[in-house]
Length: 226
Image (cartoon, rainbow, N blue to C red):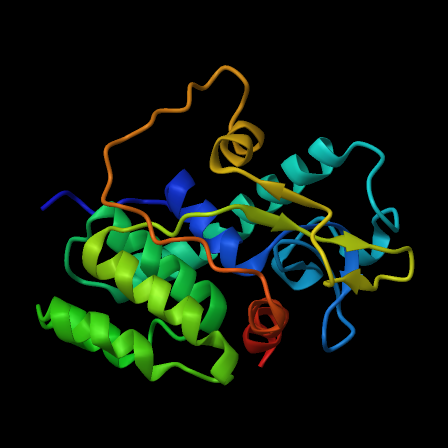
């Protein structure tokens, strides 16, 4: 087994963003906390979404790039917590799944899956992802994290970009844009970094973004605030 990765892979970040979606302007979450991009709040550090220009950016690509950059910085503390909590080596896809889980729940240090993983029982650890199903709409995300951990199969499909008005209200009725994986990687990485196309297991088909998926994304921020 490889040594544990020190940070989430680019494909892992895109898997997380498929669950969260991107709002490239400051918005108010379900608790009316000013938020930006991929769930970033002032509690995580700069920038302070409340002080950012309101509404959609004039350059959408630049706004998405900023959201990715801020998210990368935010993930560092989640990655560090996992490295402290997990005592066994992890494959990159396992680490990616745990970062997504912890980013959503904040529960890696107390989760049964961590205890089973440290005891060497990966199968039971994978099943234990499904012990975190509140609210019920989060089930598809938890299943995807479990499958990524167990099989290395990253979710497929486009990444929704949601629009926001100057009052901070997000329009979840229809994405303003859907990023393909190649488009997202191009915005995530510097232009000089090539985008490799590794051989990976067959990807999970893209689910339709219906009311349940939008509700799941909407509750993701609420769970992290709880």
